[in-house]
Image (cartoon, rainbow, N blue to C red; front, side, top):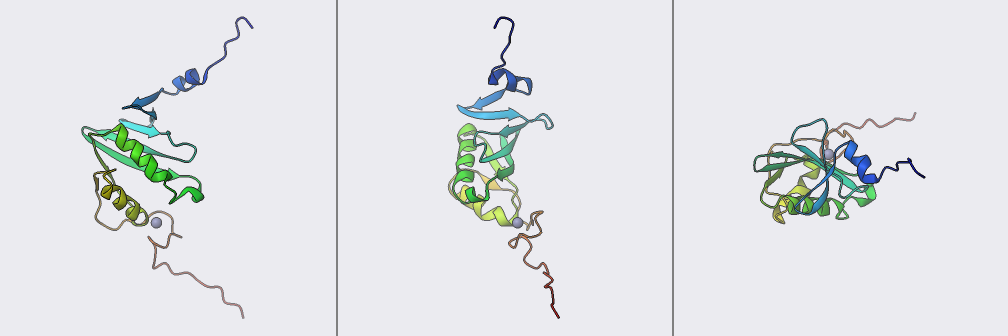
Length: 144
Ligand SMILES: [Zn+2]
C-alpha cells in the first residue's frame, strides 16, 4: 500500500474550503460565491442556511428544511439556536416571507434572533402557498 494516498474526509473538504467552528459550533463553510457569507451545514441532511456577517450583524438567509416531515418539528429552531450559540454577541436578523413570519416571531420571542427587518408583506416565490398568495384565483375545471 506504499504510495497510495488515501484522502481523508478532512483533506477532501479542505479543497473546497475548510469547515470552520465559531464558538465551538462547527459546520460552517465559506460560501465560494459570496463574500462574508458562511454556509451552515451543522444540521445536514435535515436543514441548512446561510449567514452573512457584516460588522456586528449576522443575517440569516436561505433557511431550508429539506424533508417536509421535519418542518415544524424543531429542526429549524434547533438550527437557529446553533447560530445564536455561534454568534452570541451579534445582532442576528432576517427578512421574512409572510408564511415564515410566525416562525421568526417565535425566534425573536425566544431571543434566538434579534429582529425581523421587513415589516411589509413579502409573499414567497411559491405561488401555491396559501399564506402568501391567498387571493390566487384557482380555476376549477368544469365538466359538462
Ligand atoms: Zn409562502
